[in-house]
Amino acid sequence: MGRIVSGLLLVVLGATFTRMTLTGVHASYVKDSFGWAILAAAALAFALGTHQVLATGTAEVHHPRIGLLFLIPLAAILIVEPGPLGAYAAGRAISFSETAGADNILLRYADLPDPVDGAIELPLPAAYSRAADGEAGDLEGRRVRLEGFITRRDGQLQLSRMVISCCAADATAAHIALGNSDTVGGPWPDDTWLQIEATFEGELLDGTGTPSGWDIPVFTLNRAEPIPQPRNPYS
Image 1 (cartoon, one colour):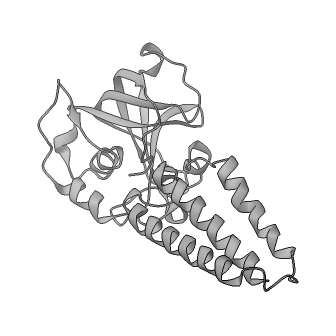
Image 2 (tube, rainbow, N blue to C red):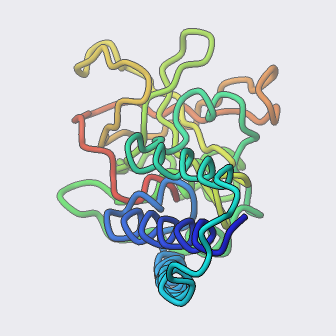
Image 3 (cartoon, one colour):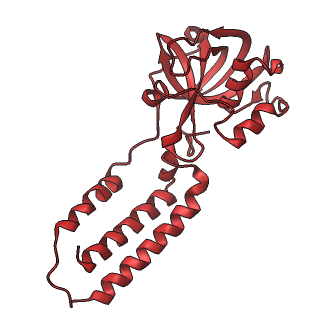
């Protein structure tokens, strides 16, 4: 590959990842907090590519042009932005556990926060862990406010959230089953993002046949409202 072609590839790569970071698209693939590192790497790639193109000038006129084909996938990312993992991936991922991230471990064992407007605000994975393993009985009978996207298993409506430690490749899923959903709005198609208020009454669905085999807690819906997909779709 010629120096000009490789330099152009670096320039386009840097521009692509700069745009992805500034628009928040990178959060569909890696933890949102990695944005600064991606931006720094993108700036370096852009600077190196620009220097290589300018330094080469017109001295190199014969070089393989096959390398320009590498621009195609980069252009595709600029034109069509793949979304984050959703209902399809959640139905096939293993269930979230306490090993899925230090932040969630702390939330799982922390005291419940005070209610806000009548409901306790929790990340969905924290609510799932407290309800599913039975170690935190303080959640039973309490009204909680959660955010996630709609999935289904054997016709049962669920609210799910993907959890990542580093990137989408290590994603696990946290699910809660939604009881009383036929009387609280809907029907909602898969991947619809909702903010809900619901109460855990101690009921668990048999998790046999799921990727992890873990039981799924049932939360009785009190309120549900569609919301836009969050900037950071993962927990």
